[in-house]
Image 1 (cartoon, chains in turn blue, purple):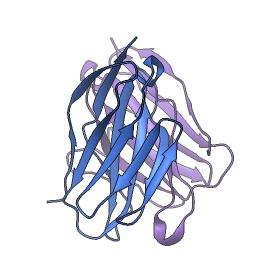
Image 2 (cartoon, rainbow over the protein chains, first blue to last red; image 1 turned 180 degrees about the vertical axis):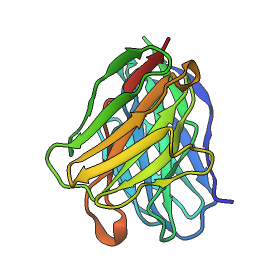
Image 3 (cartoon, rainbow over the protein chains, first blue to last red; image 1 turned 135 degrees about the vertical axis):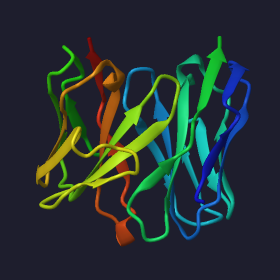
Length: 110
Length: 118
């Protein structure tokens, strides 16, 4: 069964304390892996798309990487405004639908 | 990024009434749109895939007669919750995909619609 698992469920960091969020997947024939940020009461905001193992993308303090089994979202020197839920989603095989992980709730303390 | 507009953002209705939620892609055409439901502190659950000009594809366990989806144009899809009940109260989010190679375009989301059924 195709699955997307995110860890940890919740992460609390001090401002400036770098860390990584994990997204592991067991889908066959990955077509694309997506990272989103979601603030409470809002729709997800697109961050990155990764298509193949070894690919990396960066945006401000965020960097996403991809291997054949997992993706990491690295956050460097986070600020309180980076607090949000980060969602990972995977599109697999020839299907058009996208499967979401359960998300990581990130909280950055000033 | 691409813009997806969803309306209304909040709606409160009485039990037994129907509610329509609109999803529009503002700066691109979307042959496929997706409707998700999200419970508090939970991830997004795909309800159905909306295809322009054809019937929607519903996920297992989603009642197609309760959640009516219409994709009338390349920029508009609607979700109608019929005969709403309190258990239908939830956060509904639509998304649309930009075109991409091999159907891997990026997925952009609306702001969501908070439905409360009294």
